[in-house]
Image (cartoon, rainbow over all chains, first blue to last red):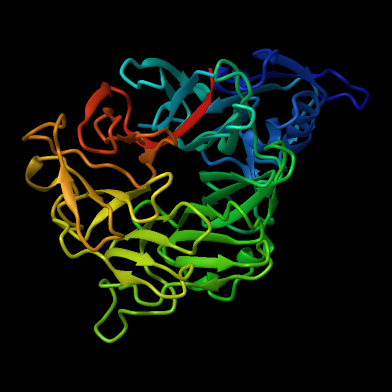
Length: 96
Length: 360
């Protein structure tokens, strides 16, 4: 894949319904500037204060039962989010 | 003015609210609230009717939920409800308590946080967080949880907490310093000769008797106890009970000698009502004598338990007594525990029951 230095296409981020239900007005799909997964979550938190606490613990790390996929690969906070990336934030199998 | 009695029910799948008038005969159920999160404890503020729920969700972590309109709309926050980077993260909030304009939250792994802005943000109570005994605290069956927060209604600086399995701790300076208060309570799960440690007991529930005195009661994994000196020493009051094992304890709203319990058959015998016959046990002489009352409760083949925060009294006269069971039933007594009525059924596993009495 060729990435232009001036490529400023936003990442397309899909949020899980149980998360958006906690933040009135939050959409299921949102465009955000790339950077890292951590940057992306910071941007979500700036729009919907408190969302970072729902997605990350204080380790800091993505919560154990939350998965972030960037262009199909499971990602951690420090991993890059390229311009135009497809990002899925998903709730893992859990509960009872 | 007429008053409304609300039962605030925390469950494995959200908060439910049962409401009635002062006669407490007909109850209306609403819920589930809080997006079906597991909610371990719910309390209400009689001054303004606000409701606070402590919970934790496997996906999204701990939070304190709040409703200012009786339960229709809820917000949540965990701002500041976190340990430092690198420490084991907080899994869930387990308890909430209100007094003197402060909202306290107990969490797992065990710690205490306080909010001065009505639950919008929290800060750790550092004295407990840095307590020298903390590295030696051991988890009980439900985890290492701070489940009981007892606040002095008169003196805002006096706080007792109970941690499973670290025991009871007391602060007389608003949380700056803490001392263990477990003298006289057993830890039968330790080797012989070590069964009365300074800390490490598995206290299941800690409550304060009403009034200005220093009387506390605790249901422990290993016995039932009363203290008349704020927990500096404890006396066993389990003689006359069918078992020394149980989880909840509910103090009478006005009589410091009256207490309600739901003993279970034993820690290693299944942890359900003895002989499958649920019975609420009551003392009116500070634990010297106990009477079991089961009128209106199932008379057999009922093998449910009642969790540590799932029994409460209201402030009316005669006092109402309530408990929620592991099978999702809620039972109510409008005559101080003498007779019982099932007022809800088929709810999720009930974690807690508290009362809120407000002007209708």
